[in-house]
Every structure is written in C-alpha cells, then in structure tokens.
Image 1 (cartoon, rainbow over the protein chains, first blue to last red):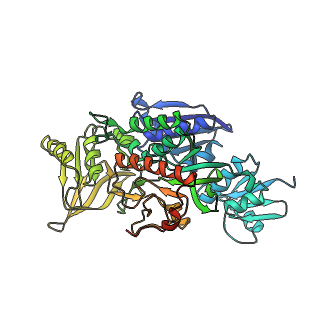
Image 2 (cartoon, helix red, strand yellow; image 1 turned 60 degrees about the horizontal axis):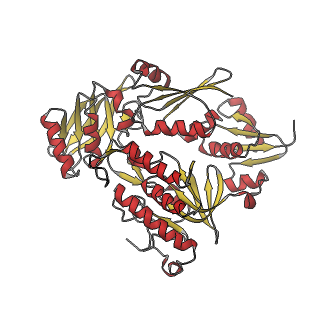
Image 3 (spheres, rainbow over the protein chains, first blue to last red; image 1 turned 90 degrees about the vertical axis):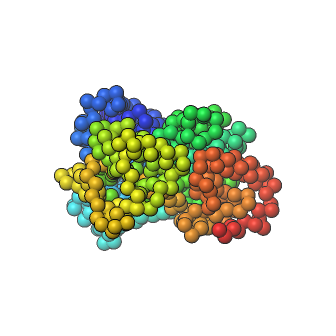
Length: 82
Length: 406
C-alpha cells in the first residue's frame, strides 16, 4: 500500500531517530530530509504538517493519497504504514 | 463473501480501533477496514451492531464483536492465547536510564529480557540538550548521545527493545501477563521503569497551538525559532536549562516563573549571565494564564504579575513549557498496582511493588530523586533483586510485599 515515505528531521531530535527505527523494524525504506542540512525545505515541512516540529513523516500510498504524521506517534504511524 | 472474511468498522481518531488493528496486523489477519466517519459506513456499522453506536465493530459472517478487550479479541480470532503468548524471564516497561541499565545487568547474566518503549529509547534524557551531572563526562554529554550509548550497551548484551506500549499487567501466579499493543506477553518478573513526562500548564491556547507555537521539546523544535522571540515557562532545572539552550536560536526569551527559581546554583549563575547579556529576561512570581494566537500562529502570552496582581503581556512567536514532571502511570492504575497520593508507584525495600514479581525503578518510583544517576543506580539494584526473585531467593518478599506508605 505504501509507495514512498519521506521524513523531515533535525540533528538533535530524538523522536526523529525513533521514527526511523520504527520504519526500519517494519522493513520500510524512506527518504530523510534533514532540515538543519536543507533549511530551504523547512517551508515544505511546515506546509505539509502545519506544525513547527519534527519529525514530520509523509506517507504516499499507491493511489497517490498522502498521509502526514506529526511527531513520533505510534497510534498514527503504525496504521499509516501498515 | 468468504465466510471467514472480517470487516472492521473504525475511525482514525479511535484509539481502540488502532489497538484492534495492531492486533490483527501483528497476527497477519486480513480484514476489510471501513471508515465510520463516512455517513453511509456509519449507518452500516449501526445496522451490524444492532444500533449500538460504539466502535470498533468487527463482523465475521453472522458473528459480531463490539470494542472487545485484547484478550476477548484474541480468543474470538482463535489465536492460541495461552500457548501463543511469548514468554520472557523479565519484561522491562520503559527504556529510559533505569530500564536500560537493568536490562544491561540482566542480559549480561543471560536473563532473557525484553524492553517495551512507547516513546523515545533513552527517555527524557534523549530530548535533553546536555546532561551535565552524570558521572564520567567531565564536560557534560548531549542527552541524545548518552541515551544512545546506554541503548547500545544494553543491546550489546542481548537486550531486545520492542516499540510499543504495555496497557495492563495481570498477576497469574508463576507468570505476569502483560497486555500490550503487540499482543499478550508472559513474564516471570516485570520491572516498571516508565519514568515521568513533562506536565502541561493547562492554560487556554496550550492544546490549540500544540506544535504550532506551543512546544515541550527544545532540542526537537527550538531551531524553528531562529531569529524569533520566545517565552519559556518554568523555573526549575529543565525550564532554565532549556531556556539557555534556546538562546542559540531566539533573539530574546521571556522566562515566566510562577514562584521563585528552583533551578540549581550552577544554572542560576548561567541564567544571570544570559540576563546580563540581554538574552533572557526572567519574570518571577508571574503566572501563565493564556496563550493567544492570531491567524493560526501564537502572538503573545498573557500572565499575571503576582506581586502587583496586574495582567502582563509578552509578545512572542512561540512558547516552550517545562513546568515539572508527572508519572507515566496509566497502565499501573489499570493494573491495580499501589500508587502514592501523587501517582508514583510505591515499593518495598526490594523495590517490589504491591504486585508480587513486579518491581519498580527510576523516576516512576515513589521517593525517587529524578536524577539520571539515581535512575541507573536503581536500575542496577532492581536487576540484582529480580535475579534473586527468579532464583527463588526472595521469599522474604512474600511477607513484606505490601508497599510502604509514603
């Protein structure tokens, strides 16, 4: 069902590591956009999430529908990538 | 339609629906998911559930189950519940400093140990900028690095970390049954090391602007406020330390403290320096009454200066909240494990709780001192005690396992 996953992260964010760890355990690959390294993409993360926070995980499904999970929230992340 | 096909009626906002889906997914059981936020689906759900409006609802042929407990669901699904629940010597609930240290000690002695962590491995320290008072690091150490090192050390000896949540513990004699988001697990002994989380202020606007101007993690979200003004709420160690950390991004910080500063001498000295440099202004005896936004963004905080009882306003782009800690005890309440008046778990001299075979260490324990060094110390103590319990040498505990009142 999942086509691709993008995670917006920062260097010092512990929850970002947890999202990556969870996706790794579940066998998903993902693209990581580190906003500290790519500050020009901060606006993109904000536009998608409406939140001034990381991690922001964007899950694109095979039908091109998109789900955005803010923070490390297993109750949302687990079904979104199932 | 296949007689065995399962239809699950649920909604995205429904926690029990997620719980049921996780159990179905964990056991690779196929089902059709129907979203009851759509009116026509909701109508079908009501029809299937004889008009009772509660989700999740599971339908299989002519059978229906409405919001079943995890145990009921497993039985309905025909999963060999008793035989199927994996067994461990020890399950550690919470992968912070206390849990990771205990797991390190136990796995190093070949005690089969599983850690459950619902949030960040490393716990609160993982989101802390610098840990300055943990021995062995003369210049301090980034909290995330310390957390990661503890995890690696525990994993080196074989500790397994499961990302999920324990929702209840039931004493079944030889084993304790843990109901978890990954299904039931049996453990001969359990260590509760769930620690504490940051409290909320409870002011209007706080929920509304969560993650859009109101934050609880400076290392996660501080960098979004480069060149902006901030308010930090809280005059304890966390409040002052995180305010100091945020000065690297913000042009100016108003630190709101409802009474006097309670931060350590070292931090107060650093705060004085930052004040002299014009980076932080501390407002003592000032409550935080409301977080006000316009056009979907925070614009100011309204408080009261308790010395004059006058309203004061602080224009700001964001608010970081560090107003103390509260115990992560939800599942302990559900398990009838004794807590003190504030909600921390009470233990006897062996760190055993009111439930036999269930021990506690670190911040969650009544009387804990909320320090990383004491959490790791308690984790080590608990590990040694649990080993004695597993070897049947803690019989004394039978007589004294009623918790001390504190």
